[in-house]
Length: 154
Image (cartoon, rainbow, N blue to C red; front, side, top):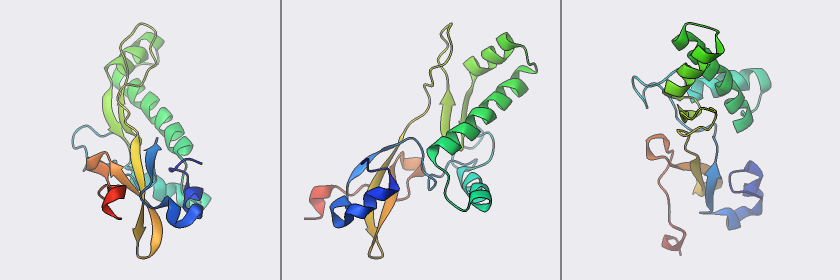
């Protein structure tokens, strides 16, 4: 079981200070305030709130990534001013923007597709008010807590 999965906390105290990567977390703070002038779309917080209103649970990274895929296509169409494939591709090649899913920037190779901008978040299980809580410790600009080295606690 990976540390980013919520069920990880079921192992109890053994989960404490374990960290690992995640594509995206509902707690992450990607917003226009975090990345002024480079942000497109709604903030991650607003996305989570709207998603929870409809589905009564936190969105998975699949939901956030799927929404962002549509958002990126929308931006490419807007930027290109066209639905013509070559113009949309050029807009994608030139895209360098932050969204609720993080940094979006694609390689400029002839066969487009590799996402170069996205950084995974690093989560760490920490104790908050006597319960295990998954905190984001990287990237710093979106972290919800500082990383606590395992050896510092014992």
